[in-house]
Length: 110
Image 1 (cartoon, helix red, strand yellow):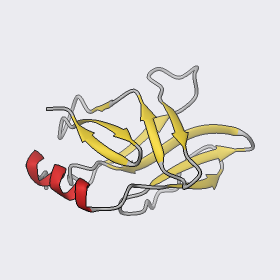
Image 2: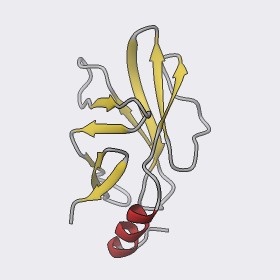
Image 3: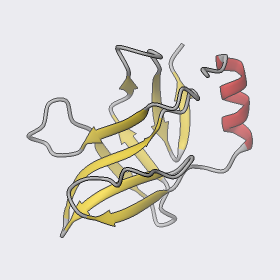
């Protein structure tokens, strides 16, 4: 179920920031945590980050972090395992969510 933006913004302001869980390998696991992101890292190379769409639709999002991939994203993780993604995530199909993930918080694009 996709929630109205005002509810999503309120929920985001009340909940703690999302965190990153790092797993060894080139693909994230099939089972994902409810809110947090999973980063697939093999050796020193980050391959992909996966998480559930924050709109509530339940869609699994898997973003490639390899510079050679098109499209690709970059992730910054602070000392508390709180992520920032670049660029924004914009789903062209299904729920059509468009958001930024900054300091572990979703910022919705209206």
